[in-house]
Image (cartoon, rainbow, N blue to C red; front, side, top):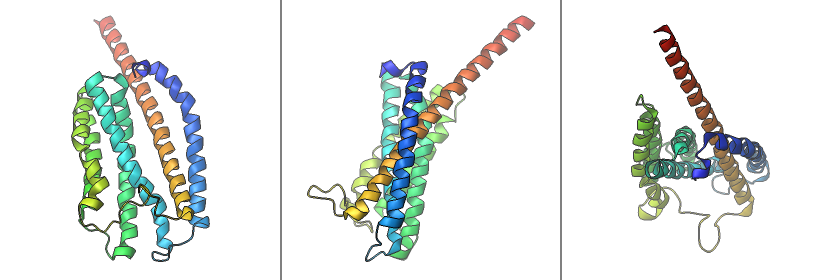
Length: 245
């Protein structure tokens, strides 16, 4: 990991990787939306509202994926003091919060016609809402200190403490009686979903993943450039103060 601790080396790597991830994002999302809205059939019970699944489920996966990566970045920052881990956390947290918000919104839109209510305080919904607040808390802590390093460390501690919520979200449908159905894709025998629905679901999941990588790279590069600019401005201010003195 120390190989990529140098911001210049990371910038070169990001410039190489970003065009590929951006192109894959467009291709996967375009294909996924076509299959989801045109080629995929409606469900015999849920009708056309099942098409919300192709956004809701991948966004739920990405909310968990984002937070796990946030916790990993926090661990790398606290244990190995990796200089880019803090920037990675700052870059990923807003993206993860958006995925979580999208999951909650589409879940409410999907739940109203299926369950007859926009919201219920069951284990899955409540734990995902807590996940959203954890993302917001992380973002708030990173901006709560004048010293970005202190804010990054405080946010990293929160990310590591909050990671206990991830298995609660994952296994809540098995541990408690909730309105959500059990896992359909991670069964040991075979996915309990037809290929006509599985294909767009996986395409949207890959599209969301490549989008996450692309936006994280863009935000990290922007943060590196912003810090360089602040350092130059501080140096120029110091020189000007010495000259005037």
